[in-house]
Image (tube, rainbow, N blue to C red; front, top):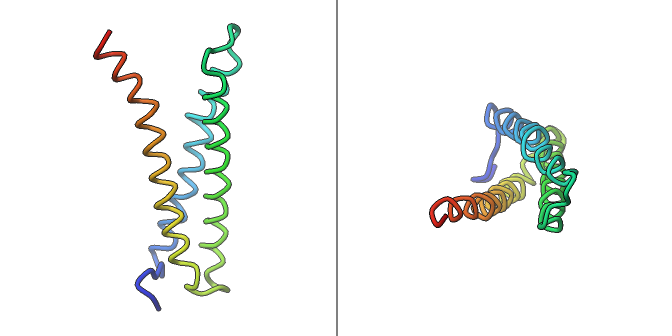
Length: 113
């Protein structure tokens, strides 16, 4: 066993969080971005919206892959635990940066109106 061990309840809790994150992405920001992209006057930042949609698609694929690895731990052992945790750290950092960019613009517009 390593210090990255995801045994027992941790494995299933992490799997639930991963699946809940995929469901959240699919239901809230992804649909909002798609609706904004389909608006009758095309938005000025169309490329930015498409980039965010692509980024969310990639994050969902990575999270689904992590779910496969988490369920596959019965056959694979704890060999991929460090990679799973590192990937989750990267996704969390990426989503944090995305939220700061998107919400930071709104905050600046509100403050300096």
